[in-house]
Image 1 (cartoon, rainbow, N blue to C red):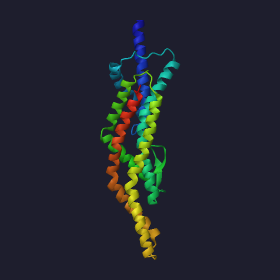
Image 2 (cartoon, helix red, strand yellow):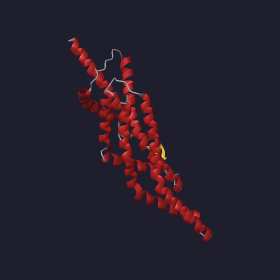
Image 3 (cartoon, rainbow, N blue to C red):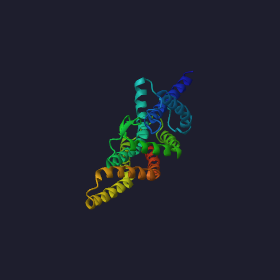
Image 4 (cartoon, one colour):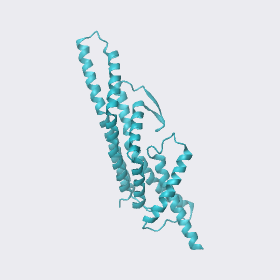
Length: 262
């Protein structure tokens, strides 16, 4: 009977550790961490995913099942699992936050930076353009199978770093530094078409003001910038959403590999 109790305890500890890792991913990953989603639904989602992932993890585990005799040991092991889950979820959010930079750049250059509203995703005020970009990029990410890739990445972390095993925090930190650069680069690169269009419009208006000084270029320029911003934004929206799909997929793979790096 003691052998059965030991096995059940090990299985319970393994499920708790997997739930900690999955819960951290659900709490921080794009789309899944949306603040408009009820908390009970997130908890139910995390428990259901952990229940589905646990048998698959047990089949691929080559290390002994983790054991914890006290709640302190269980809390320490769960803390390591939370770090892995946060690395995977926040890594994607760091890359996707580049759309907020795009929205801020577009708002400042177009003269419509005051058009800000409450952002339910990041829990702060943000540019309306940034919110539109974020929703479109997230929708394309989900439609292209991004959530399936996220779950595959989670399973890969469980295979490379089973519950209760160690990992190199330095590799995860270096991966985050690289993803910060990727997010910033994408934010600037995706705003380049609008920056170029607005620069040309400003240049043309400057030439007109020198030729026809009686025209109020401040009033005319604001309307032209607004129409030009909306037009170029709609024309380039698909390219912006497409530009993020490759880096998001690469981020999942690189983060999973960094967790299992020796």
